[in-house]
Length: 83
Ligand SMILES: [Zn+2]
Image (cartoon, rainbow, N blue to C red; front, side):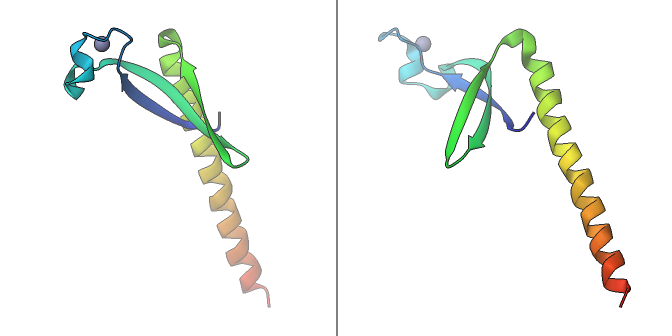
């Protein structure tokens, strides 16, 4: 899955709650995946039960890209050698 797995702490809707004045008392952690599409960055809320899946899927994407970049770099080196 293309995107960045992120952890967030949020302020709630109750005006008297301490989370509004003290960052350490914000609620969470909650999880999201941010991903760019066109010029915009989108966020998807990750249900708690899907936390590990979300981490794994975004990591898989990163790892596959890393592999593609490696092969591409290798091919460039190979082609440069064939003059
Ligand atoms: Zn609160």
